[in-house]
Length: 97
Image (cartoon, rainbow, N blue to C red; front, side, top):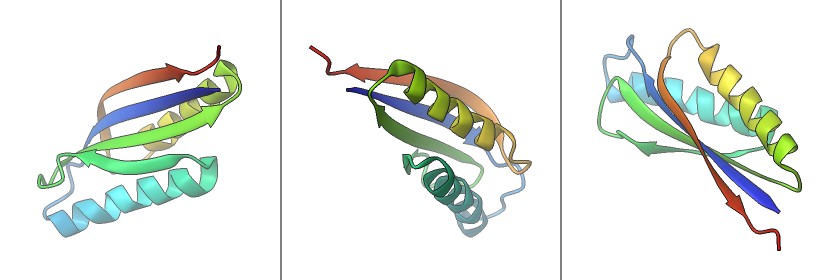
């Protein structure tokens, strides 16, 4: 079993309050959950209006499948016109023996 986590730091330039930021973040997290069946959460910068750190995770039997799922999630976030992706990183957990 392989688990992979995707960490994305994004900027939301049009946000002028935490409420408007939460709307954009909620759309990204819920959209990723429903479209790609991943776990997702806002994991950083909760009190900043125009920044967010988003975490996504998937578990698979193969690295190729996990990569494909997180590639699709990353494209989904990059395609949103309300956000600018500042950084992206992946972290792997390999439990195969």
